[in-house]
Image 1: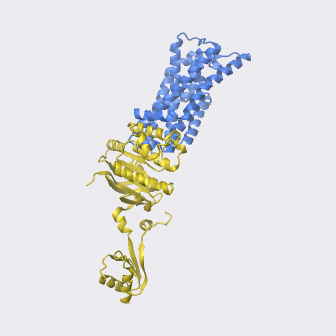
Image 2: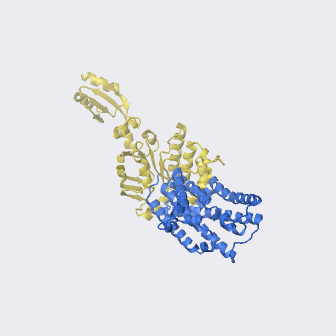
Image 3: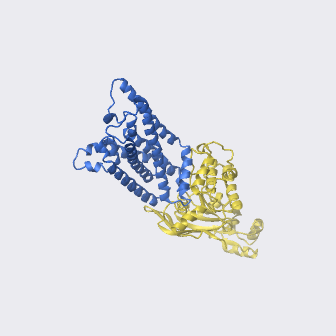
Length: 259
Length: 305
């Protein structure tokens, strides 16, 4: 596993796509801070429920504010990162050396999880710093232990993102092609982002939507005490998603023929 | 008796209703350069993929370095290197970085990288990315990449594909050097028998997924050797004359044709003796069955196969 991770390090070192992803995640908070300044200058008052991030303290919610964008960026990166291994034939180089397929799959999952972690750290840290500089650190309403809240919120949001990352990894290994993976990942992201809005209106299906992590990411307010109380449920759904998608992905990859 | 490096027994691979490999059995001993010949789509790449464990077989057994169980085969594959079909490289990385990735994959030291780049004449590529390499350079880098783990058994799928004549000669020299200097056993494929005959020591001919013939370099030379082609309306009398001349190595191939495999410099003498014996000769002359003709004869194919 360590050998495969070392190999990934060399590949990523020169990956333009990785730097583009990290660049986007650094640029987002800058643009949003500038946008908020312009709105306030035009007489608008920032409201946490609507604007999500209104000061340094609420900067911890950058993942919530940018959930959809983050997922689209990660889905594209993962589709290329894994799909190109199949298309360039480089996947053969590792597998033909007797490396186990399960280990190979897990090494890709670990690396994408790590990149996602670095990405959301950059996004959140720069969000907190920039919004603190512009609007002051402030506070999150009704939160007394900010540090504890920040850790729990960041971890929960990251897990929700990670669950989707795990789905994208599975899709990439199922499709074995970056373009097809890109399409399916995009469709999955769009469907789980917008379909819940319809299903939440129905009594019979509204519970089904909460088996998809993106529902929590898009339809919860992580500064609201009622939604904060759902963190254990969100963590459970995320973990189940990661385990199920990885198991499915590994089982399929172990049976698949490599061209 | 040389050690058996690889043995495939009755390997069968089915895609839908098409048998890509049909009970293929091949044994490769240490030091061999085994050439797998077949038309495009004959099953060469599929066979190589099964050896590397990249595709699952429907039937049959594989033995590598004496191991047959799943774990043993997995470990045995660490003693192997492969370049199947197109060179599998990271286009955005330099030659050195590509080798570093493969060294990490194999869990081996990076010490040999410079030597390998020199061996493959790639030492001056510097910061040039693999995507800007010529096909020949990419083929050489792919082979360097397979050598980083010091393999004992190398699998090369059509390594000369797409190369210009000088690139083909260069690649042939590299393969021969690997065998003589590093003692590597090689399984390589081509759809050109002429090309393979310059390096291989043993041959297996695949056709429609079946191994239709296996022969050594000597056997191939004998099958494609030079001979005197004689065409006459009176084969019986001609045979008597040949016997009187002390010629033993000949073959009556049809009602009018005889192939004579000795006394190749005595065409005039044979001709004279036949005429004196009142044997009507339609045609006589030396000829050589080309390797490709032999291959086509076996596979029943067309010349552009």
